[in-house]
Image (cartoon, rainbow, N blue to C red; front, side):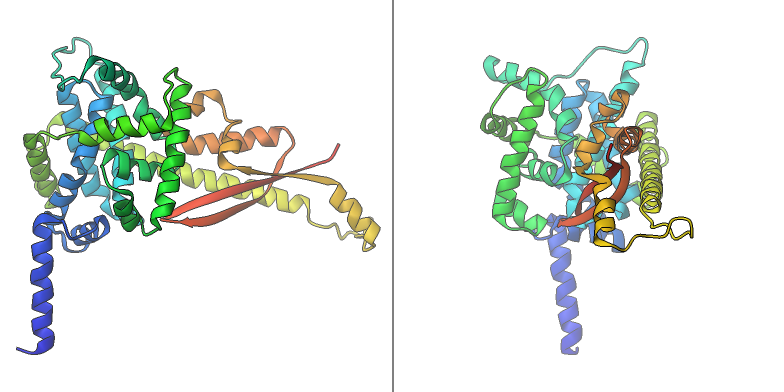
Length: 376
């Protein structure tokens, strides 16, 4: 056997061995193995690796054990259907967190509409009384506010506080310095603590980190739930899921996929709207070349033109702060909030002159919206 052939065989055997436990592969590598080669072991490893975090989200949002089980299964079935949409590949944990929260919220809304719903709830073991009160107050608010943090802050909380990774492990996964992860984690905890304080839950960022590390990262998924979810996901990937998935899980799956499609359409609509405002602003500052009013070339004329406009550069959050109140509190309406905010600024006479988007690494983008209006 040629040396090159032997080397290829060794590489395949080594990768197969790594896939059996997933320990030597990153999230991105496992996802690539599933997408490109349909490796069922890679899919199973992703479910086992992120299952505790997803289960924690489902249990915090849904108090009913069986509702949480349905949401858990639906989250990973969405992964089967939408794996190729995860970019960059190493952001699997962040993506799964968002899908898990969205799925659990949808399941809670569905459950609340049931008329004659059974109230028998299987409770998780409760901690000591003092800690129980804090954790009980924190649970219904944690995911609501964490889901609204910018991605660069949310991902470090998900990895370090919800999945129990060290800062070094998180830095390796995200491809950035450990100091960057530490800084963002500290800032994320401060932002999250401030958001929670608005609901009357006051605790320091250090206390918040301790509670999350102790409670959220220790979530344990029942073995039966993991096993059934791996089986259902593998069968769906192979196109043989009929009769395996319950009606409740199927309804959740389709509902979340529909919401994701609508969100994609909202983004396209927002881009078109922003392009319209940008074109409108550009047209306004185009110099006139008609015979009746020729452009002035003098220095004094140029100063007059510049003095005619006042400018404001705003972050997206500042633009959205002017959005309609009925959109502000719904995380699924984030693109509508941007469009509504742009419209509110336009009503005050501000025209969108430019959008400055800069890549910050890890697939994240920071956008600045530049407005202008004629001085009064």
